[in-house]
Image (cartoon, rainbow, N blue to C red; front, top):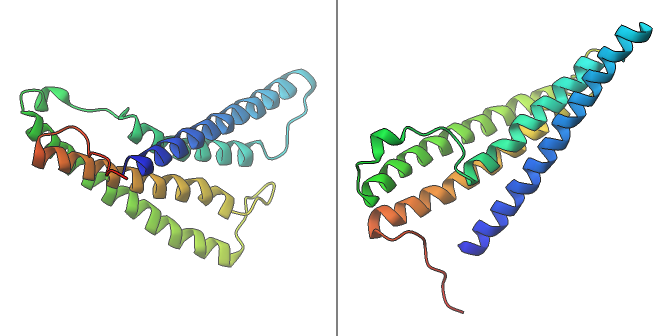
Length: 171
């Protein structure tokens, strides 16, 4: 279990770094477009297409890492008074809800992506195939589902046993 957790944590970290690169690319393209428009009256064609793709990619590639690092907002004042097992039970509920939500995003996203792929939909200006817009969403949602399922199991173990982590099997 811990080997799988390490692999998933590493995958989310690299995916988040990829998201940072995408966001930086969106900033560079947008900034270049603004500077060129203001200084020489020239606009980069497809800035909106590229920026939308990069921002969408950045958002969904960061979500799994946020789950792994437990960086999402939590209302601790409601659970601080609970025992370790009580807190773990609340975390199991939250993780199961997150699994359901992210799995729904992945599932419905997949169907929409396949429909747009079959129709050959593309962006208006540059003609970027729409499947490229769906790829980071589907990757991030699927990895987030896996991350939260693993966290749900970890919290369930804590809720049942009172111990913090699932021990590794010998051998």
